[in-house]
Image 1 (spheres, helix red, strand yellow):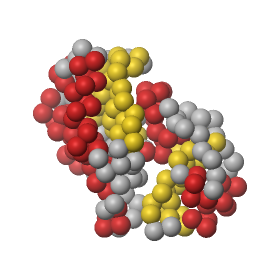
Image 2 (cartoon, rainbow, N blue to C red):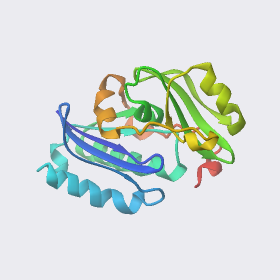
Image 3 (tube, one colour):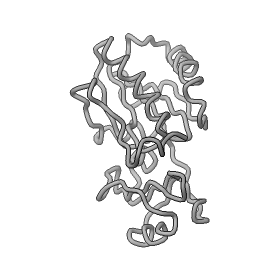
Length: 199
């Protein structure tokens, strides 16, 4: 099973090619607002490094949000075109799951701008409750309500965060993948008005 995993939903560009659970080639770089001009260069590079072609891919896995209005759509559009034209399977996970990975207890905070943040509690790869948006002044209460390892943008409240291993998390979360049965109907998971995403 050859899997192509892609995330462009937030500040990073994360691409990995795996054979079963083994990472053949990957990249994880900060590329905020530059994902669209970088993604094909990096995709082609890692496929070449793995000695694979697009036709060798069996399935594509992407994050479907929350995140940047434009960012989410970059990997999603590529995945939809690839899976539709080449008849590949498409799967999704949440951006929050990618950050938390399989951490036993985790809290994810991502800057949603305008002094707000996307937040989620995660346990062993599963989102507990739901992903939502809070004002920055509410974040301490959010963290205190369910103590765990903090990932994401702790700087919003002066807290340190653990750096995720995105490429490891992508494949370790395999049991959390959600299969997309109707690829044409797939839309990003937005949590606020679309014009507020245009960052």
